[in-house]
Structure formats: structure tokens, C-alpha cells
Image (cartoon, rainbow, N blue to C red; front, top):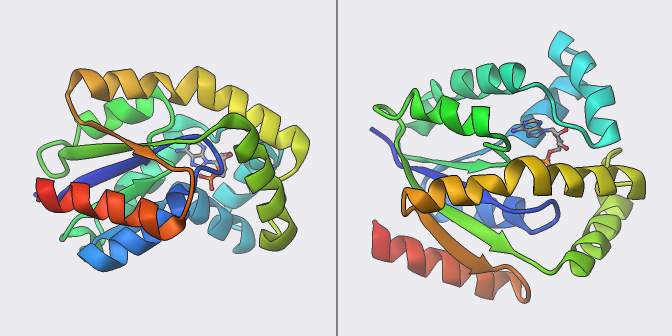
Length: 189
Ligand code: AMP
């Protein structure tokens, strides 16, 4: 059985930055489904070809494809110590798929990243200037926010009912935010 932590929050909330830091501190695997999909795109796999146009528009890749990709990734040896999921689940069917593997990977905690909307758009546009991400454009950002509100935000309630949610103020200094998450985890572990 491995700890499974979920980092949940809108695009640009800093989930990836914090996931990398926390994963290396606690010895967990960092799994970003967005990074995995971008790797498929750069390797020009069949999944990458399907994903590219969907991602560029800011839409979600199908649950079926993403769930299959994730479940396979969790079989990797580096997941034995624990896992941080960054960008998964994003829909109710994705959250339910984790219920199916809860004997091996029970969801232990869900960190919800809270940031003000205007700040987010600025962060993502800034990131787009340096990341080279083809989906960090204004049109795609708008779609990604709408999808977040519609499909992903309801998951906060889903996990709230299971008493797994910890809210994190994700505005401000990266190191302070990191300390806050790390302290919360230390109390829990
Ligand atoms: P991210 O790097 O998490 O912002 O993800 C970038 C894009 O990859 C998203 O806008 C989606 O198109 C796609 N993607 C990443 N994770 C998922 C997921 N769990 N379900 C569906 N699509 C995803």
C-alpha cells in the first residue's frame, strides 16, 4: 500500500512547482499527467497525436486514455514509497477510477491550491513566455478555467465528504507555500 496524495487546483496555481519539491523531500514519485502527455506529443506516439490538438485548445484528453496511462504509470517501482498526483483526477470518472485501485493506492490527502483568478491568468501568460507550452495562450487559458470550474472543482466536494481535503493558500512566496504543505504532511505521516 502506498500513500497517494492529490494536488488539486486551477491551472497556474503552482501545483507542479510544489509537487516537484515535496516529492523530492519525501521520496515520493511525482506524476504529472500533463507532463506525460507532453512527452507523448514530443515522441510522436499515437496517444500524442490524439492529445495534441485537444490540449492546444485547452480541452481535456478523454478519461479512458488518461486513466489507462495513469494506472500503467502507477505500476512502476518508483511508486512504492508514495505518489503525488499533479493534474489528476480532473473529472468525476477519473476520481472514481482511483476508488477501483484503493486497496493498493488509497487516497490519503488532497491538497487544494487556492489562488485568486486574476493572478492566475497573469502567471500562466508569464509562464507561456518561457515554457514554450503551446497551450499557454489566452484562448486556451479561458477554456481551461471553464473546464476547471465545471469538471474539476466539484471534486473538492467529493473529497471533502471523505474528509481528505486540506486547503493551501497558494498566493505568495514559493518557499512559504512549500513549508506549509510540508508541515501539514509531517503532521499526517
Ligand atoms: P497540465 O500540465 O496539468 O496543465 O495539463 C495540460 C493539458 O493536458 C490539459 O489542459 C489537458 O488537455 C491535458 N491533461 C492533463 N491531465 C489531464 C487529465 N487528468 N485529464 C484530461 N486531460 C488532461
